[in-house]
Length: 319
Image (cartoon, rainbow, N blue to C red; front, side, top):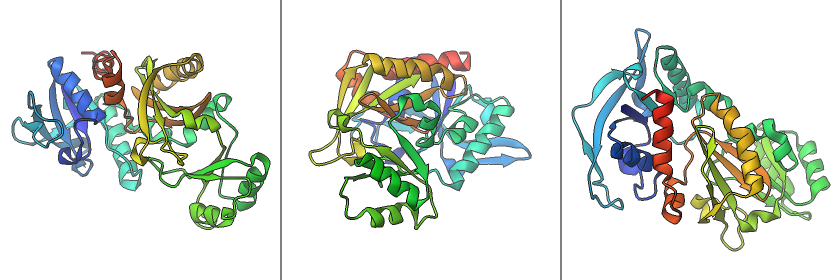
């Protein structure tokens, strides 16, 4: 297969721990060719969705902590997305309007025969915070609103509450509100932009001290290990970007129950790769843009997540 990655700039990637690079390495090991494109390089010309695509190859034995782990494998070309065997959308948020337009272009490309994973429409239709509300049987009590009175009432009802913006990533903008929170008004005003933007409030889940578990769904199937991202002392955020420590562990019975219910449903909608976030027994996020943790799970277990993904991609693309 010739696989196109739509991705952040290669020099910006930390190859030693980047899940996209783990995918590339697994695909290369299975004999596939790689190209990369950046979101600004997507365009429509006379109805055809194309990209400025750069063929690359991985450098065998390269130091993944350095920057020389890849090299160009030929000149860049203006190529229709439908001409690739698979297109992998791995551009990180922010989920701004340019990102939304990119999902539309990917959707148009699919109508022209491109095989895109995750699909543009599926990414756009599953906002990562809001998507959990479809599966409320697995969530802690949750409220989504911009109304200050509703947020205050939710806080009074549950006491310990977590509030967060709907478009944050890496734990940014997440606040743990205690029952006697003196800064309640200021925090809610800031997050809602004085009532102009909706936010999410959830009952605090004390099991966060044991980690915010990332469960990877690939082709509708769960990787048998999660990565528990354990917060730093005094923190309520387990995100690795916020300093959390990642510990791989087998899925619990509850983890499997959640994954086996959600996995096939999301796969049927064009979501080849999904990252579920679970704290204790509760689903907290459904990540569809660029789920991570491939490397950490692979390094700590005998399960090669990258190869598992590559095999699922081959099946999905009909290779």
